[in-house]
Image (cartoon, helix red, strand yellow):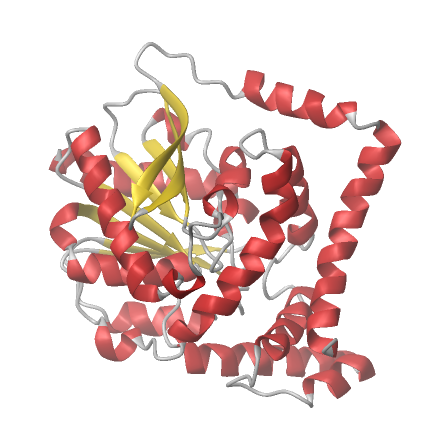
Length: 362
């Protein structure tokens, strides 16, 4: 096994083992209790509310959406998760409970991921243009279902690529676009991220890191090299500033009442397959050349410590972009995922900055 993949997989397994040990110690019944408490404590019971996990046909295959909101007449917010293959559904309650009072929040497991991972999804369909076609179809479905002309689009990491391209092609369907962990230029992205971990390793005199990183360089020859770099990025908190994100996400998957046991068991293999199939589609992304005009309000939520999608590129993109309204909002205690690292601030930024735009456009 390639050492890069082995090192990355070891980090994943350590996180999972820690959670599984806790399950064994406390007892398997605790998972059922946790799921029950999740269902009870976060249940939406308002008269006009919605709390629904459904399957819809997108691009000819069944895909999962999870809708939560206290009033189905509120603006619709579609969250495009990262990865490819990393659904937000298991963490929905971590960064959405306040949002759900002001929006109907839609979490979508993209094709090949989470609850949307099945034998009917061909690997050949896990490509950027098909994901974009699915995104557009889902937006149109939501507009029709909720009788609204526009929705809000939030894109995180890989989802920010889908977000920018959808906003560029179909601004008339959106109130606003919100980018978080925003991808800008993939080649420079990887060069800056790589140099960050090399610099940290040299500062720390980390011989193991220095030796392993010296054997790779972007553009990476394979996914194993990418995963090796990402493992050290996590070690040096360029992905999650406070650390522990992997373990937190692993636990969220394990206790998520939205996933069956079989879907929990296949969650990571589906994620890795999506990554393997779709990652190369990002190679040519350079929004500094191709997306410097967006005809709708644009918001960038930026982690001050993000070196997964380096914050300095987002600053450059923000300066270059032309839009009717644009804002760059810093999250000082975050890296790549402000929604999870600073969930209260994340939610209030959307409520304070984006809600009024959606209300005015309804």
